Image (cartoon, rainbow, N blue to C red; front, side):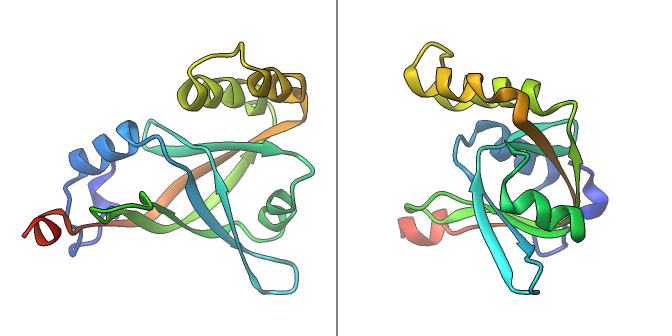
Length: 151
């Protein structure tokens, strides 16, 4: 993680944020603005590569049309159960249509562990309609209540 984008109040260092993003196999919550200006939040699978967070979704997904109109987003990656910890931040996002199918396959490997399941096969049959979403944090912070919750 580029340390220049980490908030000074972050509980973790850049290396610790990197480790969390690599090891956590949970969805990212991505927020963007809808065409009406109202917030939209969606959960997507993600992977972390070269300082960027990558997701994939169908080209026809509502989040894609929102991103095309306004590239600003917020994000959070945190487990639902204790101990409460995670990362959040803001970013300008970009869409990469060429990388969509490749990103989807990497996400299937990461989250499902196999490309042979019925769900994986269903996703793979639709991969040509995937677009990759690249999230490069403008700022990021982390929180970790593990010690407080263990007390």
